Image (cartoon, rainbow, N blue to C red):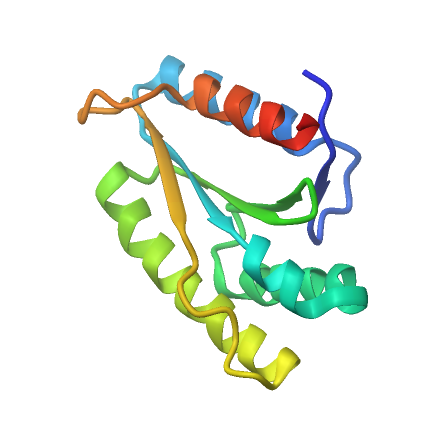
Length: 149
């Protein structure tokens, strides 16, 4: 799967997709939860104009500072912010996603000075997903396709 994933604040060369694969394999092996939360920052990217890359990276760094050290944060295709949450069930990911969207809105308001981005859509995929929604792998494939379009 070719995609433009930029892991934020990582000192190793692993890509975000590799981290997801490792955590998913670990979750399957040890029967623990893993969740992926994705914030759609497309409206903020449009509002930032020429400063979009800088603004979105600042938001990503703010999110990186707000999550646990075991969580992984990446900008996907420059306008999606993904947070991999190991050992986190879907309910915990929903709470985290809401909190992270609030942090992103506050950070965007400070950076853009125009009230921020308003509503930030949040999507969540978990393993195992008791809600019967899409799989974590399917979710990543869908994100990769969005990046190619």
